[in-house]
Image 1 (cartoon, rainbow, N blue to C red):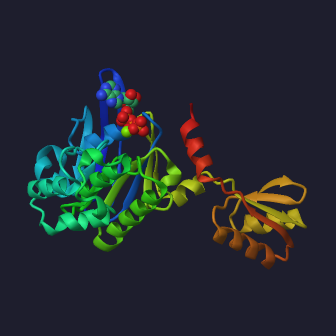
Image 2: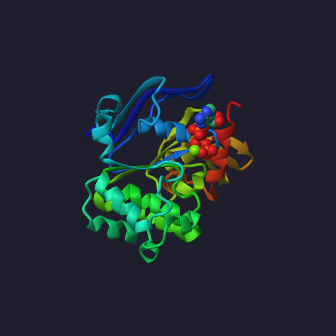
Image 3: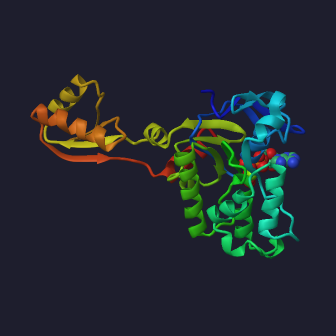
Length: 302
Ligand SMILES: Nc1ncnc2c1ncn2[C@@H]1O[C@H](COP(=O)(O)OP(=O)(O)OP(=O)(O)O)[C@@H](O)[C@H]1O
Ligand SMILES: [Mg+2]
């Protein structure tokens, strides 16, 4: 099946300011995909390009297997979006806003109540939007995006304005939509840690350029400090590990470092050494925190 979202060489400029450059994104169907970068990185600009709200200066966008520049209207009916502040009628109630959306999208009337319930808004359904809090408006924006049961959700910083409980509910809702209905979710955030428990894969951008695309595990692995191994006999240990193709590096009188990124890797190294009759007295995986990895990505090559 074609990917849910695919860009090739995507670029955009505001005047002479390059906001997005040479961006290749690929989001498979059914994924919860994170799009991360600091303020001004180009997340909103990219999302607007994905939705045809801006016209690319370079490159192409495919959404749900269709070329966006050819099939925009048809394909966007299968997409739910939340970009910046949701477009709402302030003098109408939450429910009335959703009813209008249901008409516009030909969604069944029953979806209004369902979307209110899914986003935790049932108790304020009759309240006018201008009397809703920021977080409630954000939830309503999400309800609007979900209303017509889209195959793909594109959400720009959906956690903005939500309280901690709201963020947890959002995470659960998005994971449930992906797992139970096969919905693809593309969501941006400027906080990597916020996506840690939600996403299957992610892209990191900085200054409009892709810095990373893959799983969180691969990202950690790429920045892992390796496995510190404390042994009695460094010579024998180095030999045993080299024989296993592990390229050990001596870092002290009784210590070696080898490339490793998971507890399984550590267990394999231990088993090798024990088989070779080497006494192991320390095994420590130097895993950087997600924060460290992100910081490194944001400062590397600066
Ligand atoms: N309408 C505009 N006119 C000129 N420059 C713009 C405009 N919108 C954004 N930019 C610039 O383009 C770059 C990318 O902005 P964008 O809004 O896409 O970033 P972002 O990653 O969404 O940031 P944030 O986390 O703050 O939402 C920034 O340098 C920004 O100043
Ligand atoms: Mg933004």
